[in-house]
Amino acid sequence: MEVPTKTSLAEVYPQEALDKQTKRWQTLLSTFQDRYGKRPDFVSRSPGRVNIIGEHIDYSLYEVMPMAVTADVLLAVSVHEKEEGPSTIRLTNIHSQKFESREFDIPNTGDVHIDSSTLEWTNYFKSGLVGATELLREKSNGFKQSVGMDILADGTVPSGGGLSSSAAFVCASALAVMKANGVEKVDKKELVEIAIVSERAVGVNSGGMDQSASVFPLEGSALYVSFVPELSAKNIAFPEMKSPLTFVIAQSFVAADKHVTAPVCYNLRVVEVTLAALVLGNVFGLSSIPSDAGPLGVSLRGFHDTYMQEKGGIKDNHAVSKADFQDQLQDLIQKIDNYLPQEEGYTRQQISEILGVKIEDIEQKYMKKFPIRAERFMLRQRAMHVFGEAIRVLKFNELLSAPAPQTDEENEKLLQALGELLNDTQDSCRDIYENSCPELDELCQLARKAGSYGSRLTGAGWGGCSVHLVPESKVDKVKQSWINNYYRKHFPDITEEKLDEAIVVSKPGSGSAVVQIP
Ligand code: NG1
Ligand code: MG
Image 1 (cartoon, rainbow, N blue to C red):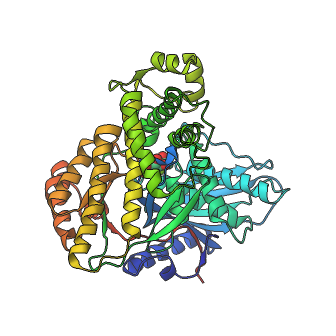
Image 2: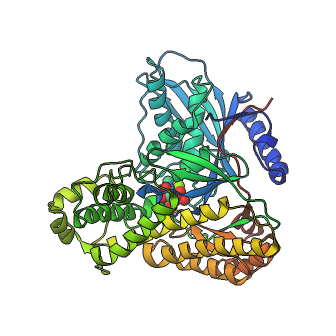
Image 3: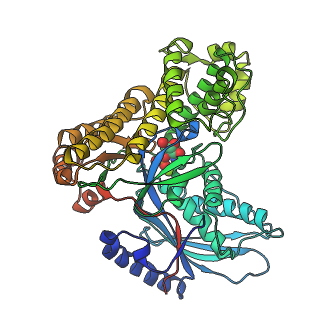
């Protein structure tokens, strides 16, 4: 599957977004002309995503269901002639007041250094550049150094907002570099894989959901992303319904900067689920857990599949039916009750004793590359959430794949069943995985009271965004309730334009593309 080249905005955006996007693109192209005195050779675009269901389980290698949103990162690019010596990258960000321009050279070696200690937006471009350079070296031997480029960036994915602005930027950057260096057909899977590795270089030990959701989607469908036995994605069309599924996205405006909070939030959860997998492997008497694509090399999915192989006689657990897989997950949840009993969490000392591994070796292997701060690791709770959330994704997918509802009450029943799963995810995030926050809980309560079928945080959490399944007839009521009871209360001097950005009704959008405007 290749990244498509598109030649009109009607191919990129849904009908209702066309006017706004046409104006935005005119500004992009005229600003490019002013800044660089020429037209761009192409525009690389990659959208943000909203995660419908499957939260904090991608790095445990369980399936997730995100969809691309309309908001995206655009990189307008003009390619320099291949020259001797260093090649220059000039980067301007349309959203910076003074149009701050960054310039850096790529030396002859083609190697670019990323200083991930500073949270600098050009680092996302550099990480995409590094990833694409590695892929280009694999594909065409002799390739060393990227050509130079003049780039104008325009991102409308709110950063730190849980819509994966970072992944959109990294994917758009890697795609731009591939295109600029003459790759006619960029393979979607390859692009996602380098984007996943590249984004980890910028300091957050993430899973692969965001990059998959930015690159793979076809217009109008959600994505069912699998990470094992290898990365793959299936487009899931929403069933034809009288009252179509409308997902409303609401910002909490609680800054959720993963890079700052990672040692006690995101990256800590990655360590907790990894240690949970190792401890479960041990207490279940497994010989070992094979290393896998998990960010720290071992995942709960790896434990799960190995357990089924060694104790359940199931050689290839990726081949079992979704129904059997759900039963396995239910069984694991029952077993955790007595295999991981400590509600108060586990200390390094206790984990070291269970695993029979010295504390410093555990720290060296799992807590050095991405530092964390914690005295107790809530292995029981995190594993409970992951197995429970994996079941909800399967149930949600089952509901969407069933025959479309024919009557109003079937329609109503479907919406309620989908909504209930979203609400259960929110409860599990708030109480068991502890990645919610009071503001997100409040947004969800208000929405449910005003008619949402299901409301939950989306993305990493601890702030950022929420997603709500709302019947079109109730969208205004939900919006009004948030404006009166949340936004105006917490942010009394909020501007109309900020309010406009706060709530987005998003249809499933299309993924990355190279756009050649004639
Ligand atoms: P956000 O913070 O929305 O980009 C993060 C991770 C995902 C996934 C979600 C939680 C990064 C780049 N992405 O998404 O892999 O784990 O949290 O489901 O950190
Ligand atoms: Mg992100």
